[in-house]
Length: 366
View (cartoon, rainbow, N blue to C red):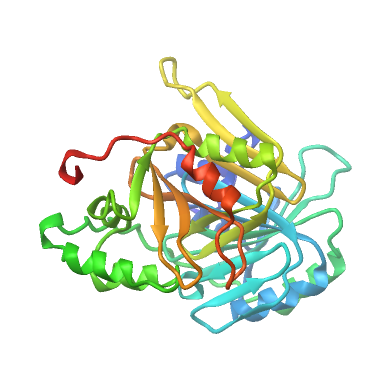
């Protein structure tokens, strides 16, 4: 398809209410490729301007814009936070945003292309949607930033102008097949357990997985009963409902291929929603939503395949997470009790976790 064809078909799908990602998929394209086709001169509602890095400097420049909406998602879960991009630091490969509301772990080595996107509203008199959208080499969205009512639009436009790149074609690669985990028998399970037992910080866990060349859920299976337990798929709903009921502040992590976005604080409005699935006999689509001022979470509850309760030793005591995975084995979201470094885990969070519905261990770990 030519860029003109892509723009015309994309507009048709958008008129039907389809999201950008779904409209692109309906054309057999990545979202990044669909957005890239909207650069240059044309008359469609969506217009894109290519951006340049360094990405850390672009994000640092956003502080003057005031409140913005940060959005990070994966295939099943969307995490939205409204706040100011402040305390942004990093290098060409990695970065951090440690603002009061916007809390990000940034993996810039996976940021392949960025665009400033303007999309005219369907209703006359409504200003266009303005955003910055970043994609990995396969055209998967890694992070998006949207203008809100309180945003300084002049400052936002200055950032766009300051980081506009030449309008050159952007190439995206075909997605690579995910490598299968190694056979369980090839894993040094004793060494894995010993290293796990010796952790002093939760951040050491990523190095532990790499050292033993073990996939995340595989490590949970191999240490089940000592450090991990299986929970029922509805444990995520139970966790959020209970945290909302008693006001326990929690941490909610959602990651894309190039960013992890974190909410820290209470959750109050938990809204499950069921929608008719595509097709006559399709099962319903079930969303589990957090709809709070400044924080929204949208998680496909019907896509939860497994939930794990995970304990990690630290110098501050055991830290407990609840982690949900989809049918493809991808991590949907992680939940922790809110805590500061140097402080032990909250007892009210541990109580919530203790009361979550469990599954029996698998036969190999009994």
